[in-house]
Each structure stands twice: as C-alpha cells, then as structure tokens.
Image (cartoon, rainbow, N blue to C red; front, side, top):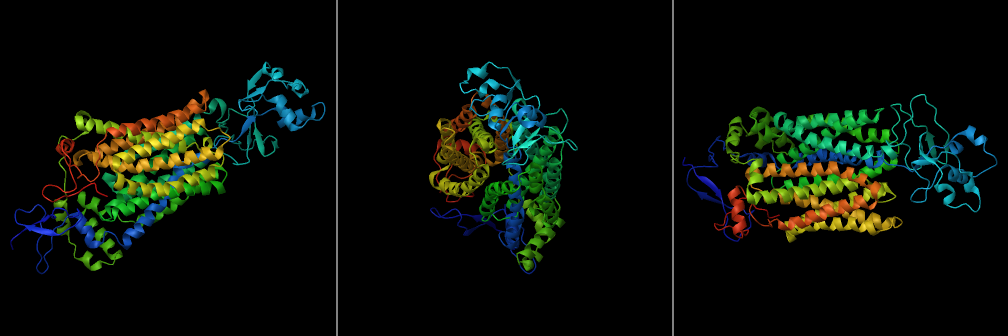
Length: 621
C-alpha cells in the first residue's frame, strides 16, 4: 500500500487547535500504516495516550491521589510559622518566679510592681525581653519615681533563663524544652518559667540566639534546593513513581524523627532531610500528572495541582489552631505521609518514561491498566510491543547540540532574557518566603492570617491565567511584582496599632506574589527555545529557591530597625518588576524551537497566523 504523510495544517484565519488533516504525499516523518485486518499503526506517545484515555476516570483518581499529599506538603513548608513562633517572654527573676525569694519580700506587693522593680522597660515600654536588673530597684515603687531612677541602674542579660507566655502555644522550638526529670519552675498567669541551661534539651532561641530561628527556616529551604537536584536526577534514572513513593516515606520518617529530636542541630538535620523529600514529592507529582494527561487536559490538572498549595495554606492554619504543641504539630503533619506511602504502590509508573528508557513490556502493562480504568480495555488490548517500539522512534527529540548553559550566557538575545527571568524568579522566592514564614510580624492572629493567604491565593492563581491571556505576559508579570512590593513598602508607614490594615496589605501582597509565580512560570517557558528551555527554567527555579533561602535571613536586619526587612522585601520585587519591562511580549507568538527563532522574533512581528497558515504550537492560552 502506498504510504502517505499526514501534515497537520489549517487555512489562514482558523484557530490553531483546529485539526483537519491534509494528506501530503512524501517521505514519512510521522508514519501511519493504514490498517487492513490486524495491521497496527505506529504513533507517538500522545496518540497512544489518547487511545487509552488522556482525560478520564484514571486521571480523576490520579489527580485526587497526587494532589491530596500536596496539601500536606504545604503544611511542612509553612509549619515554622507556628512550630517556631516566638511567644512573649521576659527574664526569669527571683522575686516573681522563686517562692523562697518571694517569702523574703518586705511587705505585700502586686505582681506588676515586682515586675517593674525587677525588669526594665523595653523600647515598646513593655518589660524588656532580654535584660533584667541585677538587684531589685525598690526606689521605683515611690510615687515620684521617674525614668532616671532606673536608667543608670546596672542591668544584665537573662542569666537564669526566660519566662514564656503559653497563652497561644503550649510550646514551640523557641521556648525552653524541659529535660526529663528536671522540675519546672513556678508558673504564673499562663507563663511557665524554666532556668536556662547548657544541657542539650534547652534551646531558648531568643535574644542572643534569635538568629537561629530564621537559620532553621533557611536550612529547610536549602533542603528543598538540594532535593530538587537529587530527586530530579533520580526520577530520570529510577522512575517518577518509585522516587515519589520513597519521598513519601522519607517525609514521614524524617518529620516524625524531627518531632522527637532533643537538640536544635539534630532538629535542623531532620528538617533538611524532610525538605529534600518534599522537593521529590512536588517534582514527581507534577511529572506524573503531566505525563499521564493529554495536552487538552494538562492545564486543568496542573491548575488543580497549583490550587493544592493554596488549600494547603488553609489546612496549615486549621491544623495549627487545633494543635498548639510543636512536637505534636510536627507529628500531625507528618503522619499522613505514611498513608500516602502505602497507597502510592498502586499508582502506575509513567508510561512515557518507561517507553523512553526502553522498558516496553512494563510500559505496555501500564497503558493497558489505564485503558481498563478508563473503560477502554478493548483499545488497550490492541496495543502491542511493535506499536510501542514505533512510539520510541516517533517521539520528537530536539537537537540540543551546542545548546547548553553557556549558550544562555553568551548569546546576546538570550543573556538578557536569562538574567531578567532569574531576577523575577528570585524576587518571588525571596519576598514570598521572607514574609510568609514570619506571619507574626504581619498580624496578631497568625492562624487566621495563614488561612486568609491561602483563600486569597485561590482567585489570584485562577484569575492570573485569565489576565495573562487577555493583557499579555509582560504587563501581568510587571504588575504582579510591583504591586506586592508597594504593599510591603506601605506597611512601613502603617503604625503597629493598626493591625487590620497591616494584615490586609500583607495578605494582598502575598496574594499578588502567587500571581507573580503563575506569570513567571508561563512567561519564562515561552521566552526560551525548545533546545534549551528546560535549562533556562531550571536556572530560574534555582534562583527562586536561592531567594527563598536568603529571605528569612533578611529578618535579622530587624535589630537595626523594624522597617529594615520590609524595605528590602519591598524594593526587590519592585526593581524586578521594572526590569521585566525589558522582556519581549510573547502573547500569541509560536513557541520558539531554535535560537534562530528567537532572533527572528526580535526583528519582525509574528502574529498568530503564520505565513503558510500552519502553526505547530503557540503561546495562545
């Protein structure tokens, strides 16, 4: 039988998704063996997936099974807003916290009076959190006492530890952990006091040790960066489902271990391991969703995956509200991963990956299994090893010869795109995690604030997709970076007493950063040619995670003024947004395949209709 080539083309003016085939004789680049009797036709993997069902019952079950863990992954990311919360605290002082010293006090004094003679006021006129008087300043009880009565008095650091307010949290990693068998000091007004010790069970991450708290958050985010590199390579070598399964197990085990660690370094170690596994969960979830879903269904399932992170923020605030002990909270958000580990064994491996690495028999089994779930068993039974072998040959393989990291840095048109794209990625990670992991600085009710951030994120992520398709990528990218920066800078001018306004600006800013993430994900993919696209996107994600690691550490500038961190967090996205103005608009342009395509885009305007009326893939949403 005479072989013919199917060319997908369309008349000028038709939509790009219109798929009326035109028969064009000639050598086959995509062959169709016209079937007669039992003959099979070779096809690329997307066509194999369409045969067994690219958007059916299986994809529904898979999406539920994979997105549910994403909700709990988000709780791990945001956990230290609550497990590392800093409660109100003051120095331990004998007059208030030692019954023997109280018995020797001449006369009867109210606790407020004893507090005033034992601890100097801080900058906010509340009891100082890191200093106490060496000796009680009884002259302050006199009616004509003024600030000069105590300002010259000798003070000292909290040599005997701190008293923490447990009205909101029973315990956090910041507060003192009681060693087994060691008696607690006296409790007063919901506060528990405990002498500081060099023993391994006492953390006290306040005052001189306050830098350790953001350091713990940066170590966690560093784990995500390392895990992304390790798990990405492992999933390409061992398979997506296998790496995902063991990532679930590592999250559950390391999260449980972190809850029982007696020392701060060990706690950070297991949180680092947990974070590396979290990266494996996020990456392989996205891979399995995309590789088992048709091109038409991918936007839907990936949107649901993104919304999983939004719902996860609401879940984080809800779980933390019900569990006020940091050890129990760490256990509560880690235990579900044991369940995810168990049922993940029933998830199929990516058939695309199996075929790519030559495991055709396993790929055939998985395709037939999916066909049965999608009620297309008859179609699945027609698949043969010969069909899968032809699929390997028909899969497009972009020629990456000469395309490398140096190409991005040394090609003039790509160099500017690379640096600005990385700057936008960095600004998102830096500002979002710098603020989102310090909700105490943004509002009084951190449980409600955490939930509100997730709720606002839902319409922003879905609405940003609509805005991108209407207004273009560049304008949306600029807006979603500059607007949150202005919200953050505005908070510098808002008094701390106006908590509602401060919280509203913070929620709006973090919500817009969610839109910035959606924009940069789409925009950066469209800016670079196919031969080097994943390298460029990978660089951007490294920049985002590097920014996320640095973000919490910027809070240490707060010792020079509470406005300093907000200034940095606000300026970075504004400058990044303005830099994005230098990027070209990619709306309705065909996705570039080669560096020459990028150069052509820069010298002439490309419309949605190409000169010959055919378009293979475009950036039209």
